[in-house]
Image 1 (cartoon, rainbow, N blue to C red):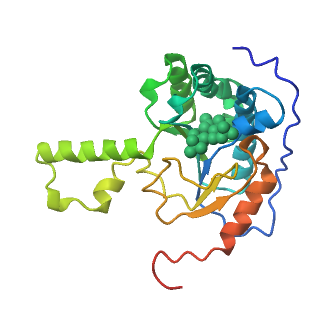
Image 2 (cartoon, rainbow, N blue to C red; image 1 turned 90 degrees about the horizontal axis):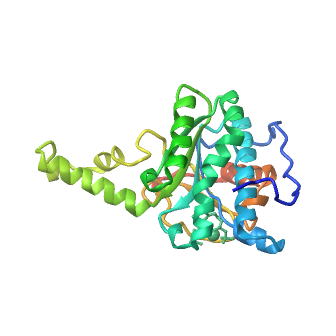
Length: 255
Ligand code: IPE
Ligand code: IPE
Ligand code: MG
């Protein structure tokens, strides 16, 4: 599908200067990018226009995260439950990673961003898988921000995969049930090589996790905003960082 007939929409303005008030930076920020459809509806536009605008906003927020030297940015792009949507919308969403990479991969490479993905990619169209694999390959030696995209991701499915892997190791006598501890599970998560998210942001006013990183978010700080994802700007990101640095993380202990 061509992308050039969309009405002109003002881009959110991004500056690349750090706000000196922000002194505590989370290593890992995870975002549930929600509200694309409502953003479009509010403007009398089709839902897919919201997804397109949301895609462009990903690039802007990557730039902001990079400015603040966040190490990992995990973005929820498509859940294992999103297949329930009308076929036309699903097809559009399936093509978005490809579109995103065809527009932004050269910049991301220059910006030293390392692209990673979590989720069951084998269910995506072959052309999308190809574009993603190319991006993984081209950025694998980059040492800057890790941009981790959750695509056809579901936390319960991830846990099913973990359980299967443990069961298989027991069958092969590599593991006994009494050896299973939290590490056994951590090592088998799709995110095993990443730190746990420090900050979770969800846009669009919904206050739920929608099957996102249920294990990994056990001690994450949550921040919610009513802004729809396409309108989530540098300003909101800074608000989230400012809120984060006020939090007292106790992990069940005392300060
Ligand atoms: C988030 O926006 C993008 C995806 C879930 C793929 P939505 O499409 O959920 O937008 P709303 O929540 O219907 O407004
Ligand atoms: C969560 O948003 C999934 C993504 C942002 C990819 P949804 O819009 O699918 O979540 P629900 O249905 O409102 O819980
Ligand atoms: Mg939604």
